[in-house]
Image (tube, rainbow, N blue to C red; front, side):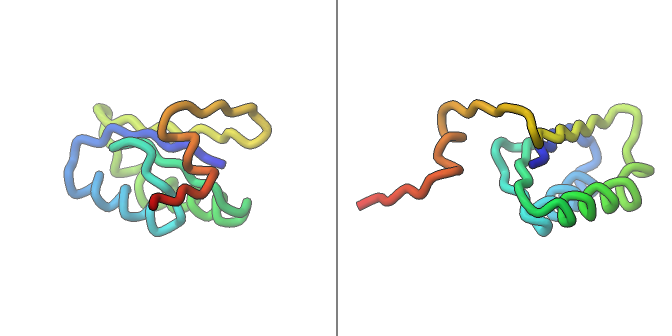
Length: 90
């Protein structure tokens, strides 16, 4: 699983980055924080895409942090705990 957090100033680049994450199975947790829980192959492909298509375009004022949380204990609170369980509203 990857957690990706970003602060990208350029609107166009930020929108492309967000759409790319979503296209590769990312779930938006907060406005600029995504969770990607997929196969190892998909995660590696996503990292390659970020490196090849986006890294060179980030400016000095942009910030992108990618956390690889495989093997690390993760505790969720609030709305985040419902991501792992089905909720049925009647």
